[in-house]
Length: 365
Image 1 (cartoon, rainbow, N blue to C red):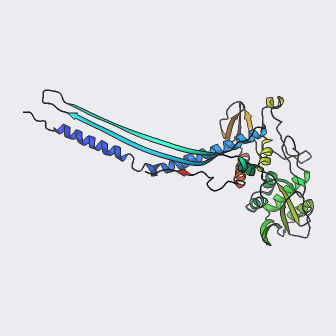
Image 2: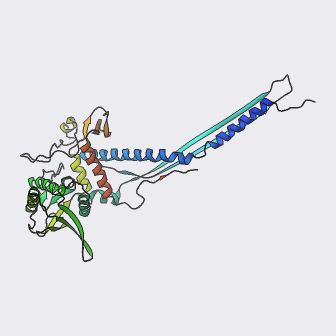
Image 3: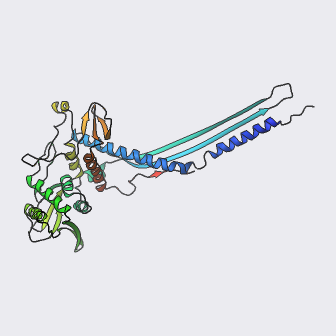
């Protein structure tokens, strides 16, 4: 009676199969830790790029009288799975009959990202876009070193009744000559270290105070005298209350009427270069090239957004809208800084509750 005995060849084959099974099972070991470095930076890059494109798109929508829409990324959950399956079958018969072996296997890799979006709407939308930028926030920006002319031109509508420029098609205006002179002098005083802020207790509330340090440089001292004269401030005083409003109550107060984010967007959008054909057809108003009115009062745009039919080769951010490309050049460093600052302002005026920031969850097993 014939017996089926394992040959040396079949033993080697079984060893090979066993090693293959172990290798397949080991494939999923450590998959979690290996993905953290890749996923974290990939999602950060993707969210950052989409945030820039969404901001530029909403500026364009504002310019063309379309409704801006914000869609926040509230959570990112990524799940990985690796499944291995190995099948083995073999049969032998007495010589001279043939023997047969069969081996099969499969491995399945699954990546299931789940991204949650939350549209900005209702009360949150109204508060984020329509509420004026807090005056203390403007003072904190000045205190942290942001240039005074930069901050006042973007965030401030009026200071003690002196009006900034505004790019609205309905209520637009050029800046008062005094406003241009004011922010230039404020910037010089700030660079010389003569401008400071502090918070003082005032009963159960807090008072925000702007003060001017003694200045030894005659040129900078003359700039301080100009600022006080333009704002109608007490020439002997060094500290001045800062409040929200159009006009001050007395000569020891600085009244700042800050802008809402929607007003900031309208002003920024007015400088976007739009196609001449859209202007001629009445689809949009003409692009502003200056915030001044001549005679040394010209002020160049803070951010430059170009447009064209062809997709830009190198851009910091670009979007396709109404059959045209709109973009900020990557070599335009000033425009990139201002555009970034605009996005920071959105964060400063955010009124959502906790959990609004994106959460990335990556299972590690």
